[in-house]
Picture 1 (spheres, rainbow, N blue to C red):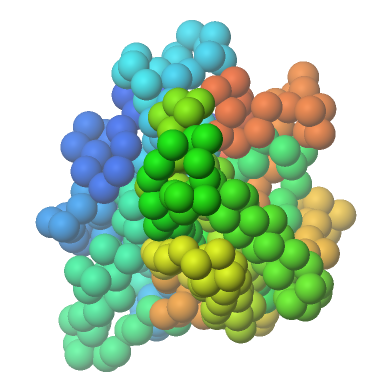
Picture 2: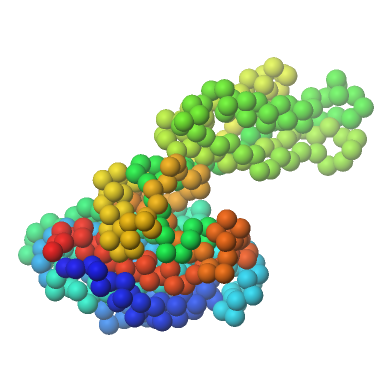
Amino acid sequence: MPISTLRAEAHDSLGDAIALRRQLHQWPEIGNHLPITREAVLASLEGLPLDLNLHTSTSGIGAMLTGAKPGPTILLRGDMDALAMPEDTGLDFSSRVDGCMHACGHDTHTAMLVGAAKMLASRRSELAGRVLFMFQPGEEGHAGARYMLQEGLLDVAPLADGTPSPVTGAFALHISSSLPAGMVSTRAGALMASSDRLLITVHGRGGHASEPYRALDPIPIACEIVQAMQMMVTRRIDVFDPTIVTVGRITAGTTNNVIPESAEIEGTIRAVSERTRTKVHAGITRVAEGIAAAHDAAVTVEIMLGYPVTKNNSGFAHFASGVAGEIMGAEKVFQMPHPVMGAEDFSYVLEAVPGSMMFLGGTPADRNPATAPPNHSNRVTFDENAMVSGMALYTAVAMRHLGDDS
Ligand SMILES: [Zn+2]
Ligand SMILES: [Zn+2]
């Protein structure tokens, strides 16, 4: 199956993809329950030879395309959810929902995956195996992928004649307004970080601000803990297996002449290996408890586990880079020297199946990638033409994984 014609074919589908993307963009939804989005996706898939699995724990959709020949199953993922934030792009298809915006480009992912489903369905007679299209809600902190896995997404039935057809590969794209349109980037191994939430409560004793010796002031203790965590990071963590601990909120007190009873520190912990992730959790707990003890105070340290490290299978990342090179030109495929510290719940899929994720360049033509508003900005915009490469890539990776590269 030649893949050289896929870009031209995807170009013919661009109008449909743009229409769906703009429809989703105007009606963004947040979290794991996206009824309007699910309806739009189902309407777009109508008439295609897909076996649909409408998930019940979330609005997720597993759509299976079965090729004419036997073979394994490859999973292609597109996430569908938006963010709780205002939109200030001025686009004529801006969000019509107050306080809700597709600022991470998931509307383009959904539209590209629908486009790929159409392209692959038209090649059904040539496909040796199956393609499982994963339309996923709740990527933005709601673990939608994990819910879909728990609901049995990967427990796929054998083929009609009983031949097993397990999921042997998984692939996802993520558009970025900070990468030039027409390029992709990825890497072998860790691509994105784990993301855990940190909450430390320092327990002191309230009193009069003029008599701190009769109270137990939690505020300087909290300040010391914040500083000491940064020192722990630089002195105890291998600089080539890094971590980031950022305190995003510190809250205590009500007015100038009262010592409060407690202080709260909230933050995020990022790591790109499970080894450092474990080590930094222990380090934070040790430092917070030790500093509190030094001042005769107590402390509660809570670390709420979020998404694991997004780890590309090296072989699959190499394979997908090769396919991207064929589609877009080898010079357009950038191998990232290091991971990024953002997080992704495609990580759960990659823990279960060898696969990889790739960033798709989407800087608008009139912008500089270095200064264009980034993903999650209230002013972010994407070059919709990038969806041509995206649709071709999803399609080509699935075709090649299913083994026939004639
Ligand atoms: Zn995002
Ligand atoms: Zn995203």
